[in-house]
Length: 74
Image (cartoon, rainbow, N blue to C red; front, top):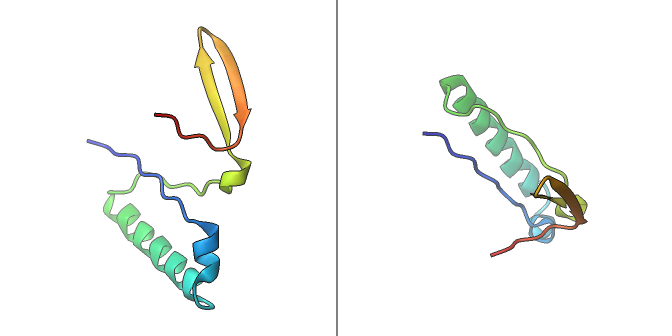
């Protein structure tokens, strides 16, 4: 079974961390990802653009619509 995981970091919370702590956390995360890759557990990882650059792409009846901004729909 495979899973996809999306991790979102709130830029305001990251900026509020003590100097260097966000970098240390990212470094630890990347090291862990490298270990998972070596084990064959992690197949791929990609860094996404900031949420402000997000676009929602919708395809309905072969018609593509692109909307600016991040959207969460229920």
